[in-house]
Length: 255
Image: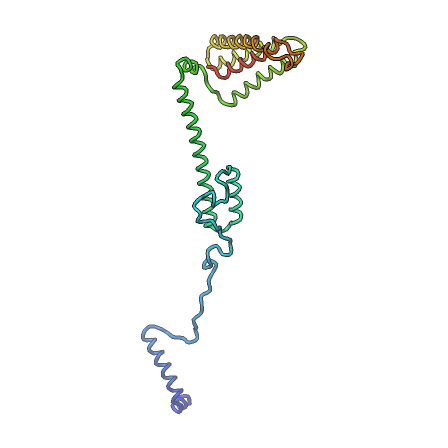
């Protein structure tokens, strides 16, 4: 029946024969044509989306000057640089190129600041060394007896002698500061002996510092106007305060 209808209808038979011929030709070439399947667009995943998605992009990515890129003054402090960096990273979080640009500008400024401080420190040491080398011989010989201890040592000994001074002032109405001066001298000799490893040398330096301080105090204290001196502060008390300063300098900076 289907054959007879196909033969009776030339148009239908032509279409059918054409379809069969195309099917046979594709089979020979190794291809199978199926009219049921149609071409569809392949859906795009999140990776195929534009870079950054809806994340805002840093508008100054290509700005060469790191100060202008971060939006700060060339005279900005390190705190301002850190604040600008943190603010921009928070604002453009999630956009990789923006974050890299902000971090690059921040690191460049931070490295420049570090190199400037290091260079200034080196220049200061070089200047001091040059000044020492150009100084007279007697100054060089004098500097051979001087050293700079750690800051902690300086503050500990400063606190000790300041305490002695305050103790002497509080007991000024009861009597002289003889006991406090003796304790200060003993402390000075002890500290010097730790450095020099020579009790005799420490004893000589300690007594010399006490004598020098007492003499200087006896000379310069009377020159102070009486208006500036408390009525209960005697010449002996003020002289002992000067002696404490000399004892502190001797046991801290002499070697």
